Amino acid sequence: MFDRAKLRCAVFFLIATAVGGQAVGSPSAGVSALPAILQIILANEDPAITLITHYYVSILRRSPEPAGLAYWVDQVNRAQAAGDGKPAFRQMASDFFNSAEYSGRNTTDREFLTNLYLTFFQREPDAGGLQFWFNHLSNGVPRSEILRSSSIAQMFTNFMKSLGF
Image (cartoon, rainbow, N blue to C red; front, side, top):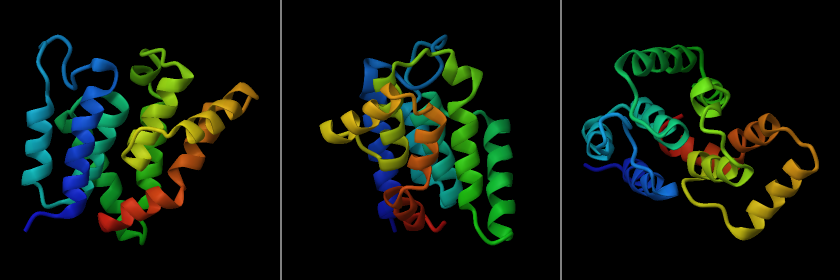
């Protein structure tokens, strides 16, 4: 049976691919990795892999490499065994958004906020929400604080719950 949360992620990946007109995948290959990503999601029964892949695509704009995927699956499994997988996902988001790979994209505040919305809320930001967070950034609130707020938002918590976390 096809899981509704997986469908939501798959639709998200289609949207994420269109944002900024960039294909998801290896720029050197010159092809989109979207079919491979959808194949991972649709064929996989592990919700951790679904959400980890979601992070790679929405934040880093590429599919996960095998070693990175294995590392994060292990981190999530350890956190789940300790009683709560959510901290592992929050750490992953922080690591990805603060990575040299993400920083190297030199995102504007609008792009950063759009990436947050796509990552945590699976949608583009609405005008009011975008302006709210843009005002915070303009007033000196660091991106790290807005990232933290997004990662603990109820809407994202509900999304994680729908995946079993």
